[in-house]
Image (tube, rainbow, N blue to C red):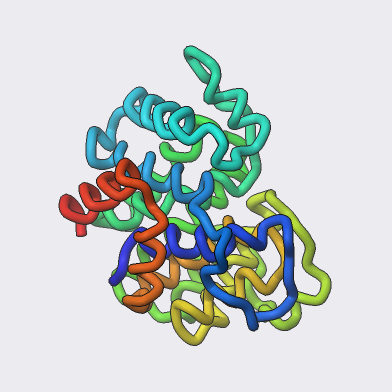
Length: 261
């Protein structure tokens, strides 16, 4: 299976390691307390927006608010939590990685890289309108779209480095010893992309992301969203991730899959 399942599976696998960090790739994928978090909820909110009306900022905001308030304890940042409670919310200049964790549906709907970028920017700026917040969403979406259409890892690396000035020359093994929890796009999106570039397959990509010892669920969601455009998500991992969704989120996932994939 390919598609947004990569972000969902990455989120759930990383969920127990967000505040219980590890520095090893040897861990159980779905321990007892595994669950979906805000990464999955917001990814599916974007998916629902694209199903409803992808050109409407109002529909986008309403979907983010509806999903966010339905799962109010999913683990949002303080600023986004406040945004959810506003009647007419405004963007708050965030540079955090929430824009990148939720962007993957845009890359699966788009019929060109330019359309993917347009959708990614719109998906970000309603909250994460800081240049780094937008950049993180765009770079992630570009990587997914390019992987989806068959670009090589070298082509993806070259494009992201040239367009977004991210340093992708490092390796996971070089990053891991000195890396710590970082929710900024600038400090987590390049590392997440490297987890994909260094990965041997989907599962190895997720293990790379969690093993950095950072914002594990979000970094695994970002890395997984790229990996699931490049490789198939193994059936056992996809099935286990889907089993963690409730009926509302599952139906949203199925609607998006049916309409676009």
